[in-house]
Length: 208
Ligand SMILES: [Zn+2]
Image (cartoon, rainbow, N blue to C red; front, side, top):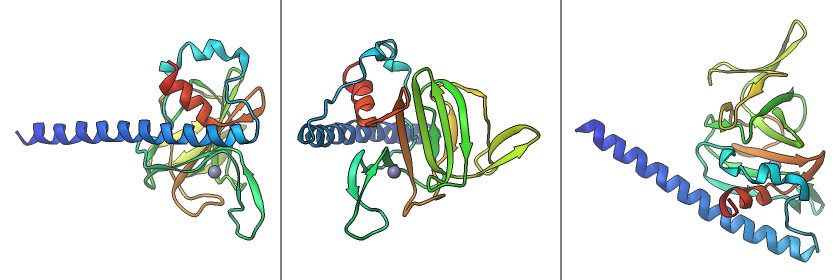
């Protein structure tokens, strides 16, 4: 009896979280469309991405316990204060400290680092797409000729060059690097050019 009650609570939570992602993503897309229209940029996926666009159901939302989008892609007031602006090359997704991050799309671990403003960071290459995950828990270690991301408490080890499936747990939300609160900074590049992750989320949730 108790088990079933717990199951019900769990699924309600999941449904709530899914609705939260959908509604927040819709608002995010709306705001990014307004900004992009103002700056005369085109809100569209690069033309040659149809091979991926046909299979968005294989894409995974990058955090397990979504809370909110805290900062979108584009110009914003400098995070270090003052009146200066900076270009934010990614999307900030708030989630509880220590909650799991999932690999957006199957690919190869192209790089691991922990010595920049990005903190402990994973770069994954999937064809022409590069996806970056910043401010994670854990640290980078080298052993022999290999580079590893080690998050012992989270039970995670990732090796540079390793293949990772879409949706696989690759890290946990941390506070490493330049950050004022626990969140995932999620960056996306297509053929080496940064683009707004909101465009990809729109394709994942509204065009598929
Ligand atoms: Zn960010």
